[in-house]
Image 1 (tube, rainbow, N blue to C red):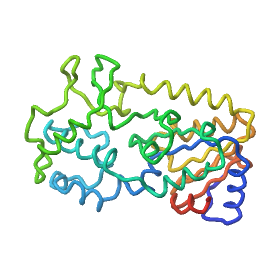
Image 2: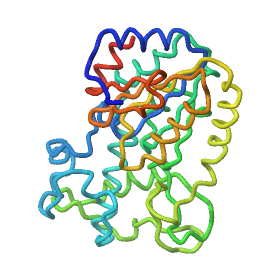
Image 3: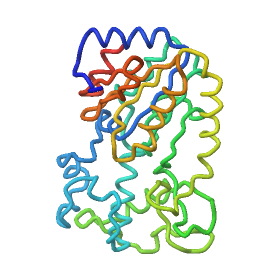
Image 4: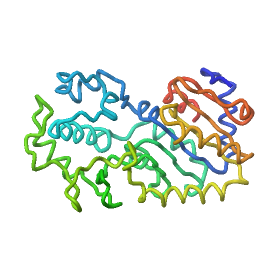
Length: 287
């Protein structure tokens, strides 16, 4: 079933579903980060934050996701700046505050978050960290790329030192002694985000199991999944699991908000609405 542009009648139906709900699962992909102001395809934003990277032929943040032809000085000069900007520097945003308000009528313990985003914006905007499942990781942590251990560790202090020692004209780290390495084996490290088979997720599994227990508690209740910005880059992480939940829980509804991929499966058309358009505007109209 095709997603809809803004339709007042469907907004009213969605609001009624939310008002009747006893449980709400907040679910989000990259489109939610974009709605909060960080669009990885935004060339103006990239030019403002990383002007030195233009000389190497890069014009947007998404071009560097998965890029592996680095020299270490440029890799860490860029990644420290990028993680600092996205994970630590970006302020609280109205769209997340309004998103949270959609569950204002529900006890906090009856809400949960599942997101593919690694920027911790849910936690930084007041959502309970104990009820946030982030299967793709967290920019705030480093891990060994071998990996020689399941350990992950924070690196904000290293980020600050790297930024201070990076040439703003070249984005290159000038002090190679600051290049992060594994404290256990001395090998290479990378932010703890899912990119290949080396990804460590042991520390994420407790919240994943918490989500499973929460869903089991909610299976015979009225619930709503509000999914924002989860498209087809990694549909097996957010989009398809949400559809599976709705299929297996007959008293649950799905509200899918997406700028381009708002379609919902035909077999769920009576319990799902797709809103196609600007997520911030749609969330605001659901208040």
